[in-house]
Image 1 (cartoon, rainbow, N blue to C red):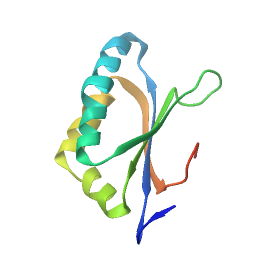
Image 2 (cartoon, rainbow, N blue to C red):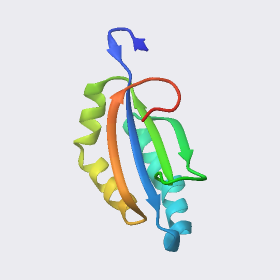
Image 3 (cartoon, rainbow, N blue to C red):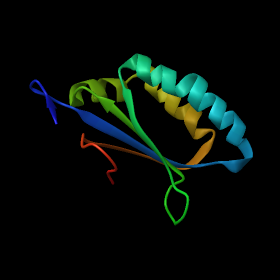
Image 4 (tube, rainbow, N blue to C red):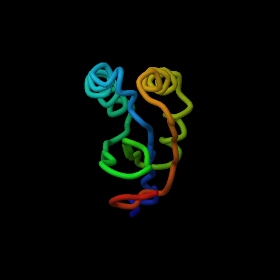
Length: 106
């Protein structure tokens, strides 16, 4: 899907939630993480929860208008601070940047 000459880009974040800090995790994600990434220029596309199977608990998909914007955000100190804070509440953290496609991607 293209927007002018720019190609939408998706950031897929996967992780397992640390069950001992789940309430603090929820407060951080809803109160700080998601509002901050939206302010930085990323839109929340999807949030997936694994109910069964040997897969990460969560996959959050964030979209930017193009790859250059995504790279600028991921190289920023603000993103690194947010990522570090999120990692205090999760394990098996992973990031993947891919060309945008609607729906579930791996």
